[in-house]
Image 1: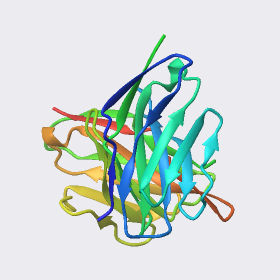
Image 2: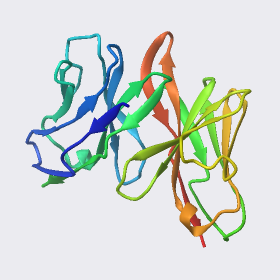
Image 3: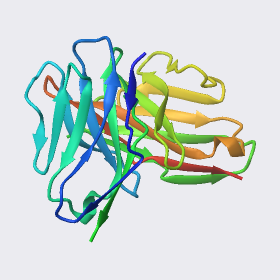
Length: 113
Length: 118
């Protein structure tokens, strides 16, 4: 069964600094999608970044980038120049056969001013 | 991108009554929608997959008769919590796949419904 593990329940970062959130997953599939979603206090799920497994190039979206290590089944999210608005719960998610998403437990990110 | 509108945002109901939650896809057709449940500070747990014109597929452990899902059109899926009890109090979220042309972008989520059963 596909599983997604986020080993950091909480992380803190100083405003303008960089933080990396970890995610590992387990799968026997060769082609799949990985996502990072952000859930602020409003609880609206917001797509931060996505990665297609067959693409070796790491995805980037402005201040957000990933380090995708397919062989190691690792998918970490790096947030550069952290802002107060980045404070949220971050979920790593894996899309598997049948178009279902499985989520990690989440990491609460706190941004200090 | 694709937008999913979910209503109501919050609802309080008495124990034993039923509550309906609606999710509408705006400006796109969603042949499939996904329903999640989330407890405070926890992850999203998939409850069921809603398919237009056919029966929903429920995840293991989810009571089909408790959580009725209907997907009668390409833009509307509903979740009805029947004979609600306090333990059904939770945050419910719907989701649909976001395609832009032939490109799969991810999943777009409704804003969620906070259900409180008293």
